[in-house]
Each structure stands twice: as structure tokens, then as C-alpha cells.
Amino acid sequence: MVVPQRIFGRNSLSQNTMRRPRPTRPVFLLLCLLGSLLGGASAASPNWPAAPSRLQFDTPYGTLQVKDNEYIYESRLHFNDADVAPVVQGLLNIPYAFSLPSSQIALVSINTGHTDCPVSYRWVELKKNGYTVSPAFGSCSDQIKVTVQGRNFLVQTPNSQKPDKIDVYAYDGKTIRKRTQP
Image (cartoon, one colour):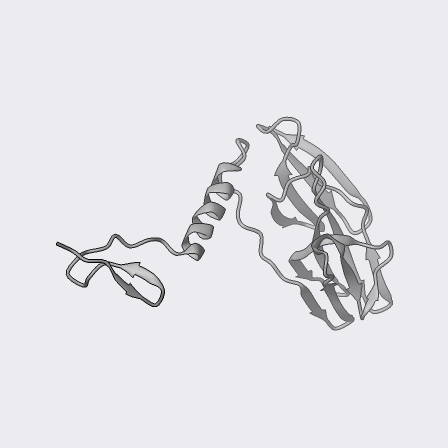
């Protein structure tokens, strides 16, 4: 007969009895996170890469960085310790950055937490004489592929209305053009 023993305030069985190991809380949370990520995959492309993550981008012209706030959706984008104009606010990330001969350019993802369209993007070009911020663009998805084609920076993302289509946003340093492809 096995007699329970009281050790450190918990009931446990004697050493001769095998206990089934219980998963720890971090393992459980990791499994939940993986399940939610895999469950949200798009039908348009099952191979969307995970976007890199950075909160600071150092350049010869200054530093572009995310200034945290206590409330997660109120972080702000700063250039040389001042808010960029127009103000870029939300859960921010700088997933991609590129060096050009006379400037540096960074893609900023902005998650506002809104349920109808939580994610948008902006390009920020940093130069010797300051910076420019593109208009917001995107198809409300955090799934993106970023490439460079000639002088254009391309962002591909699933179409929000038709998941079997891909929206391609081309930025040439001045304007953003959108086209949808099958």
C-alpha cells in the first residue's frame, strides 16, 4: 500500500511510485502560441516568412527607434529622440531596412489593435537633411514578403477581401502603387 507523504506543503507519493510528469506553464503557453499562429495561416500562401524584428535602426543620419509606452499600442516612432511627423503610433516594429547610396530606408509595421484592420505599414527614408514618411498602406495583415526590384521596394501581403489573391505595394521613394495578383 502506498502512503501519501506531505513534502513542502504538497501531497506526493513515495519514491517507489512513478508519477506522470506534468507540463510546465511555459510549455503550455508556447503550445498555445504555436497553435494560434498555425491556425491563422492564409490560404493565399502557406509559406509567409516570419518578419524580422528590430526596435532601433542606427544610420549615418541618426537613429530611428521605437519609444515604448506603458500601454502597448501607444509606442511611438522617433528619429533622433523626437516624434516623427506625421506621428506613427501603435505596436511598432522595424522589420526591414536597406542602405541606398545617399539614404537609408526602413519599413515600419504598425499594429493599432483595431479588429477591422489592425496592421498597416509605412516606409521611412532617412537622409542627411532629414527624413520622409510614406502614407500608410497594406492589406491589414502582418504576413508580408519584402523584396527590391530595381528602384522599387515591394511589399507582398494577402488580400484582405480575397485570401487567394496577393496585394503588391510598390514604393519608389515618392509614391506607393498597389496591384493585386492571383
